[in-house]
Image (spheres, rainbow over the protein chains, first blue to last red):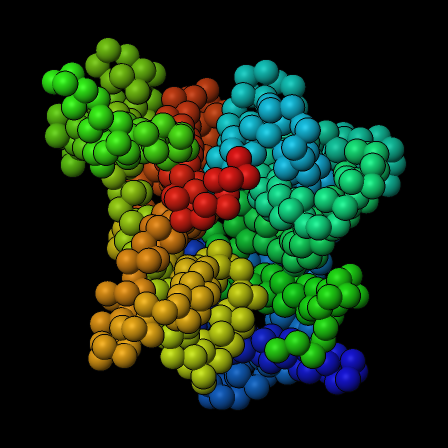
Length: 336
Length: 301
C-alpha cells in the first residue's frame, strides 16, 4: 500500500511537470514574438549595429535552434531535452547554455534564501508561540498585528527603504553586490571572503525576513490557540506539570506540525522567493539573471528559470506529501 | 417618568449605528485600515481634481530633478514629471489595476468554488485537480513569462497589467468558497429552500451568498493586494506600462536612473511610502474583515 502510494505520487509529480512544461512551450508561441528576431532587435537598439542581411541571419539562427521545424517536432525536441535536463542555449550569452548560466547563479540564490528561510521560520515560530501563550506579556501578544502589516508589504519595497536608510544615509552596510569586487577578483574560499559575503547579504536577508516573519507568527499562534483548547493540555495543567514543560512538550510540540509542513513548502519557493530582492541588491543569483534575460529578450533563459522554479515547487510538494504521514501518525496514506 | 423613557430605550434597544460604532471601537484594525484608505483616496482624488494630472504626471511637464519646493511640494523627477501629480494619479492607477485584477480573480474563484462545492461529483474533482496542478506554478514566474511576450512596452496599458496580474489569482478564493459551500450545503435552511421549490441558482444567490459575504469581502481585499503586489513585481522588472505613471513604474524609473546614488531621495521615498500605505491599509482591512467572518480569531486576541 505504501509503495503504491509512492508510485502514484511520483507519477502525479511527473504529470505536473509535463503539464507545466507543455504550458511553458505553448503559451509563448501563442504570441507573435520571435525570440531570435527580438534578440537582434535588442542588439540593434543597444549598439546601433544593423546587419543588412538581417532576415538571413534570423533564419540561420532559427535553423540552428531548430525553430524552423514543424511545431510538433519542436515540442518533442523540447520535452526530450527537458527530460535529459537540457534547457537549451542562452541567446544573450550564446554559445553558453541556459544550464551553465543557471548553475552559476543558483548557488548564490540557494545560500541566501536557505539561510533567510530557516531564520524566518525560527523567529516567526518563536514569536507566534509566545504570542499565543496566555502568560506572555501583552506587548508580545500585540506583536502579531504589526508583523502581519509588514508581511503585506513586498520585500522589494522593504529592501528599497533599507537601502535608502541603512546603506545610503547611515552608510552602515554595502549598497549592492554579493562581495566587494575591488578586493576579490573571483569568489574564493577564505574566511575573509565569507565575512565579506555575509556583510553584503545582511540587507537582502533582512528584507526577506521582515517580509515573511508575520506569516509564520500568525500560523503558529493560530495553531497554538487550538492546541491550548485540547483536553491533554488541560490534563497536563491539572497534573501540576511545570509551565515550561507544558509550553515545550505539550503546546509547542503539537502546534509546530503545520509549521514544519509550511517550512518544507517554503523550500520549494527557494528559487523564486528572492527574485525581486536579488535584482534590487544586484545579488548575482537567479533574480539578477532573470532581470538580465528580460532586458536582453533572452526568452530561453526566462523559460529555463520558469522550469527550474516549477520543478522546485512540485518536488517539495511531493516530499511533503510523502513525509507528512511520518510526522503526524493521525494522517494515513490512503486517506481520500 | 419623562426622564426614564429615553434612558430605557437607549439602553435596551441601541440603534444600528450605535451598535456598529461600538463594534468598530473593538475592531481597531478595520478602523485604522479604512482611515488610511480614506486618506489615500482623498489625496489622490482631491489631487486629481485640483491639479491637472493628465499633463503634469507625464514627462516634460516641469524642470527635471527639482527637490521639494514651494512650487513642486514633492519635487520632480529626471524626465520632468511633477511628483505630486504623479502620486495623485499613480495611486488611482495602481489602485484600479488592483481592483480590476481582484474582481477578475474573485469572480473566477467564486464561480469555480460554487460549482465545485455545490454540485460536487466530477465537477468538483476536475476543478480540484486543475487547482492542484496550477498550485505548483509560482504565479510571478508565469506572469513574467506572459508579460515578457509583449515586447513593445509602450503598448502595455493598465488594463493589460490588470489582466496579467489576475492570472492564477483565483485559487485561494475558490478553495475558501468551496469549503464554505460544503459546510453550508448541509444546513437545514438549504434543505428547506430546496423543499420549497427554489432553483439551484436561487439557493446560491439568496441563501448561500449572503452567508458568505464577510468571506467574500476578505477574499476580495486579498485578491486586490495580490493584484497590486504582482503588478508591482512586473513593473519593477520593466514589464509594466512604460507610459503610465503608476506607483510601480515610478519606482522602476527611479531605480533605472539610480535615484538613490544620485541623491534624488524624493523620487524614491514618496512612491515607496504610498505603496507601504496602500499595502498596510489593505492588510489591516483584511484582518478586520477576517475578525468579522471568523469569530474564533476574535476570541483568541
